[in-house]
Amino acid sequence: MRLKVEKSNGYGLGVLTGVLAAVLIFCGAWTGKSLYENRRVKETSVSEDGAESVVNSETLSKMAAIEETINRNFYLKDMTEEELQTGIYNGMVEALDDKYAAYYTAEELMAQLEKNEGVYYGIGAYVMMDAETQTPYISGVIEGTPAEEAGLRMGDIIYAVEGTATFQMALEEVTGLIKGEEGTAVTLTIVRDGKAFEQDVVRRKVNNPTVSSRMLDEEIGYIGITEFKDITVDQFTEAYAVIRGSGAKALVLDLRGNPGGLLDAVVSIGQQILPEGLIVYTEDKSGERVEYTCDGKREIQMPMVVLVNGGSASAAEVLTGAIKDYGVGTVMGTTTYGKGIVQKIIALSDGSAVKLTTSGYFTPKGNNIHGKGIEPDVVVEFDAEAYYGDEQIDNQLEAAQEYLKKKLHG
Image 1 (tube, rainbow, N blue to C red):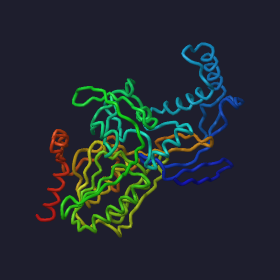
Image 2: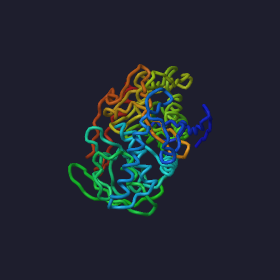
Image 3: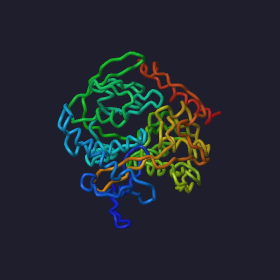
Image 4: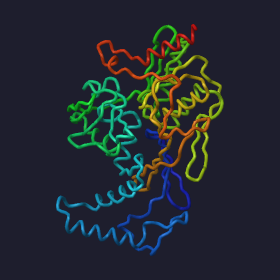
C-alpha cells in the first residue's frame, strides 16, 4: 500500500493510490466538521462549485428533530451518537441509487485495504450481483479454500446469509455478512438448479493467489487471472515468462469469473501483451479524459484465446476489450458482465471514506460496454454438468485448445 498526503486550498487531502478491487483509485477529499459540532450555517449553504448545498439550516434542524424523536421514542435499542452519524452518511450515499457507491467507516476502509493486499478472513469465493434479479451469486471459487472444500460452485445463488435474505441487498453488505472471525462458521442458503439448501462454511485466513499457470500440452500455455490486485502484476509477469520459457507457441488467457480490480494492475499487464496505442481511456462528468497507453514493445507474438463469461467484469473487461479491438487474441466463451464505469474511494480526513462512481471507461475503439458487456468472437456455453461430473471436463478450455491447435497447424 502506498500512502501520499497532499494539501490543496488549505485543506488536508489524504491520497491512497493503487488500492482496492473493482477498478478503484484513491484520492483525497475535504471533509467538514461533524454536523453535530457545527450547526451555525447560512440559511442556504453553497458548495465550492456554486451549487446549493443540502447541508443548510433547514436540513440540520430537521436532522436534530429526527434525532430527538428517535432518542425519545425508539423502542428496540438505545442509539449512540456514532451510530446515528454513520446512518446519516450512509443515507446520503444510498440516495445516489448507485449499487457501487458506499460509505466506509475507518474500520471498514482498513478491512477493504487488507482484502486488496490479497489476505482476508472469509470463505474464498468471489461474489457478484446479478443486475437483473438483484441477487448475489458465486462467480468463482479459489482453490484450496473453505468454499471449495464445502462444495460451493460457480453460479450458486446466495439466497440468504445466516437466515438474512440477500435480495436487493448491496453487494458489500452480502460480503460483509459472509466475512468474519477466523474459525467461525457462516451458514449460507444456496440455490442451485432451482433447489435450495443450507451450507455451513468455516471462515479462515484466505491467501488469494491471483494468477495460476501451466502448460496444457507441449505447445499451448495457460494463464488464469482471478482478480487484478497489486500482487497480480508480478505474478503475471513471472507466469508469462515461465510459459514462454517452456516453449509455448500459443496461450490461453482465462478471465472467467474475474470480477475486476485495480486499473493500474490491468494496465500494467496489458502493456506486456498489447500493441502500441490506447489500452483504455476514462471520461468523467465534465468530459475530462484520461488515457492509458502501451508502447507496443512487448506485443504478444503467439496466437491467444481469452476465455470470458458473465462473471468477467470491470478490469477484466478492460483487458478483454483492448485485446478484441486490436485483434491480438480471440475472445471465447459467453458475454461478459458489462461494468464500464470506474469507482474512486475518496478518503476523508477522519479516516472514513466514500466510494463513488466517478467516470466511465472506453475501449481503444471508443466502445462503452456498460450494461452490455463484450460479445465473444466465438460463443461457447459452459457445460456445468460435464465440469462437475466425475471426469470434470472444462468444455470451454477444451474448445480454446482445439481452436489454437487449428491456428498452429491449420
